[in-house]
Image (cartoon, rainbow, N blue to C red):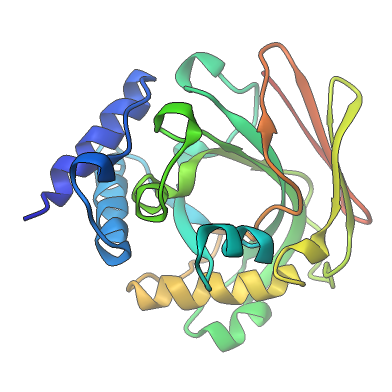
Length: 247
């Protein structure tokens, strides 16, 4: 019998103690549905400490990554207000962080079905996500990464723009003024709007409603790169401006 709360505690303790652990499935094999149960139990631990849900993040939104992991659907995790970064990222609170560009959507009203989620969008922005797997060497199986809340750690975004077509926006990730990754938002399921609809579908299927003020991180058009200390990161998307963060 798998103890969901015990597994969630192991991951939560690893994150709070900045200490990488071995994959949970090494000792306790479990499947994807149970992995999401562990994820939710971990989020409930955070909510118990006073954190509030702030949105949804999508993962494995490139066809290549899906093929690599042997899956045919995206994965997702939950964002809390404590993950939102509007200043320097405190690297001492993270294990082995990586940063990636994101397309972010702002939800303007309650979403009751995946079919109308696009009409509920109040804004779109260029964003970033800091990933920080709690597993040693950033290696994991599919159930492991889902249980670990899809490696969510920190996120942020630039100025909001009125809802618009972001299906093919050039994006650039720079660290200390040096281009590190370039890509197009088209790499996000062919169109980030598909990822947005998937976010609504998966959340509703899990009994969650996307709420006004929540953010949906649709996914990354490039690989995530290690986030160094004392760095200045800038992410730009054509027509959406840029967002900057320091460490």
